[in-house]
Image (cartoon, rainbow, N blue to C red; front, side, top):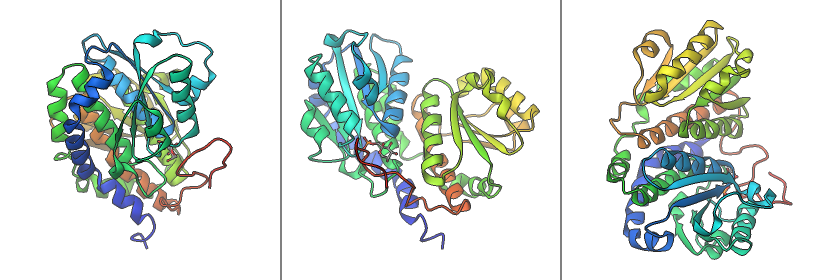
Length: 354
Ligand code: F1P
């Protein structure tokens, strides 16, 4: 039964390391053309996309801004470009990176055309679809057909584009350590390691799941909440970790599961939120490269990846484990992750979901 329901989704979760390797190798072959288009001395990047593509854009911008150096980045949902009458940054010296798995999402195509036509900006694209509108409208595109999932939900394409974008960012800020870590990533994912424990947690079917993260990890938390909603139809929300204390913490009960997408360097602050949640009898799950002793001694569900990879690469490894958790929650809730409700593989204005 389980074998059938969600079989495609499960396969796509498991295929990720293979895709990362393919993407890294094929992108590296294009290093010169990528840098020729973006410009080796670029100072500003604007990432745009919708849904999961927007979330991965935010991760990339956050990771890049946290690096020393002169490149600054921002990420906007494509619809915010459509809303804006004026853009508050130097459009002449900013390169746009538009991300879309389908390459057809209407807001993203409209946004990239507006940025080109109204502001004269150069647009690079990242997509899974060869021949797509995104590819046709971008000045230069990286196309990864292997990331074009059969399923509706962005799983391997989410991490695959994160890996591709990260490699480009590492070149732009001249961080060879970042690149080296990326090339070690595919050897570090062991989905069997936490499989049974993650699955077991879903059996208790939490009423509400809150995903928390700081900095770029907030983008992971946002995407995780989206996965829970799409795959499992589960009530889920996301906050920047410490923002949760500013009001939303009042919703914690023993039926609420809080999941922390934890950056080890932030645990000294984050722990305070977690202590409060535990005090309110809330359940907490931590996914992290390396957990503090307090976490290990006090929490029921601690998943330490111990990959040895540095920031911001180790954060990417968290996501497939959480996707697996979302998958099993979907099964536990009687949903079918292969057939999410009301979501079309390509979201277009004027066309309702399925
Ligand atoms: C992204 C997106 C996903 C969503 C669903 C439909 O579109 O909106 O975030 O989960 O899969 O597509 P795209 O522009 O990357 O194709």
